[in-house]
Amino acid sequence: MVTLRLPSVKLWRAMVRVHSSCSSSPAAAPEEEAGGGAARRQWSEQREVFTIWMKSLVLNGSGCTVYDSGGRIVYRVDNYASRRAADVCLMDLAGNLVLRLLRKSTPLLHLVGIETWHGYRSGSWFTVVSSNAWWWRGGGGGPCCEFRSGDGDGRVVRYRMEGAARATRVVVDGETGAAVAEVKRKRTAEGVALGDDVLTLRVEPNVDRSLVLALLLVHHGLITPS
Image 1 (cartoon, rainbow, N blue to C red):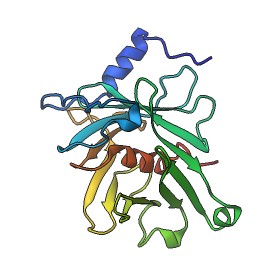
Image 2 (image 1 turned 120 degrees about the vertical axis):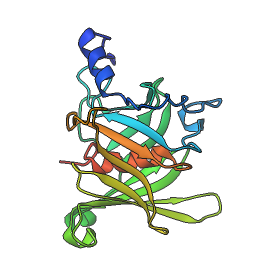
Image 3 (image 1 turned 30 degrees about the vertical axis):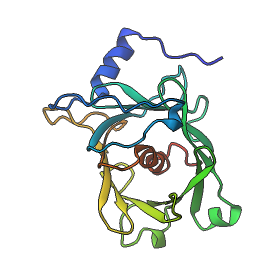
């Protein structure tokens, strides 16, 4: 039986502390359409800012919680007994499945330092590839993840996350070189940095935020095998 964290004063204060505190008016909640989490629109026509707290809502569980700019929980990951899992589900607050990540690396790829994950949303959808090998880093940067996703017309889109796991990371469109998202350690309005487990995610317009989160889950080590 899964036990959710009780809304204790300590947890409530922690949640208030980490959620996004933009000076502008809070953004409207992500548009919700009929159906589960996967059926809801995962992108916006405006730039979005989220706060990621690397804590699970499940008591004694492991995972992360994603807040929008108004402090509402929009996504969560709960690995329950394991911090580093081979099967991870990104859900909305109600527990509806948004996407699923499965580790699919072969012994040969693992031997040369490459790990692969397949993403599913009503069927196979994308592949994430990650490696710490020096030849993968492409010029001396931190470890990178490459994202491949085919849309309706068969065109393949590639995103790459650049930057060390504990520093500012940028998601770059492989075709245009444009930054489509940025992840960095969260700071308060006064410029004070919060803990290493509190991050700010900025997503550019018309970019699927769930795909960016899939990259982050791999890159941050939440589902990387020990």
